[in-house]
Image (cartoon, rainbow, N blue to C red; front, side, top):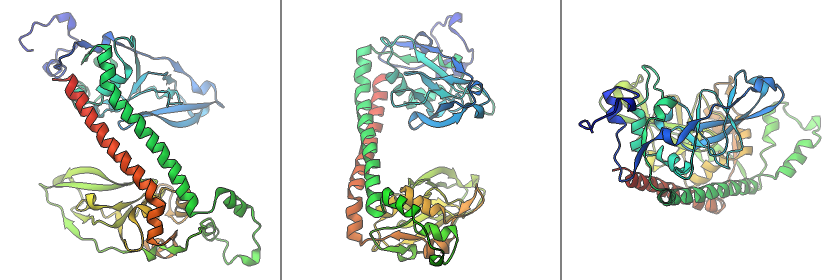
Length: 427
């Protein structure tokens, strides 16, 4: 490649790094993106329509484009870009981690911040949008992008640089074959997720009173003489009604005996985080010891409930399973030991995904708007959960557990399919 003759007019960047990093190998025809895409800058001025609702899109590196939020025109003080069907949109500061989306029929919203770059494919008979979207997910092409970002502090990929990148362009029929399996799996995964939320609603109805009966309860007249306390907390207790026994958390949780470790400078550590709405525990980041300010961390143990003691709201609780044992957590996080003879782990995790239970839990927290937390004793002694026998718990969660296992299986299959796609188009 270095010895190859290069025409001056083909150079947009004289950097050696640029010339080497934009070079890719493929058994398919390779061409510049500029021959297939065009930037779209069509905008609307929401502030001219103060009472109109504007549906705003967002982009991340997990799902791509998603319906993000609805704002009134008066809340927006700048022009927003319009994103039409089969348009791409990306954050120029996060494209290096795959933060790009393709608008599909699933996306009902249509506006995006002017900071995002929007473009479309000019001729779909030569390049399929789905093929290009998949290309942006491959490690090889992401490395090409990372090597072409500019900026001393924040790395950015401009449209001018993007359109000069080269990609493999197989025949259109080959493109269709290459993307078929990936998007077929994605569609199956989408249906499983939709089914999961239906099953979750059924689980909630099985545990708690129906919305209809709950509304009747809320409209009931309450006699003064029946009230021992006018506290909102006391009144909210009545929202939790179940056909199963309501027991305080102390029936299944107890104080944990968590070991603290000294951080070693040269060792790599996995630090735990917890997601909102009962989505569980995850690896927040991996860090070399010398880069950690705190030098003492807690060592996670399986079969423990885990949450942030300084910011506990919206169901931000997770369970430490075997795969997370041996990871670490800061002193801001709290553990409680779970009695697995009395409560099924998956059943417990699902409770934090339920709307009615999270409303009840959020009423237990104290603190400022940004920092709300629940005291450990309050959680153990005064917070109640529906507690059927362990056999009933397993039966209640059985369908949800099967569904989630199928989702994880398909997610692994999706990852392997992307790897095969990458191996096929790059050499």
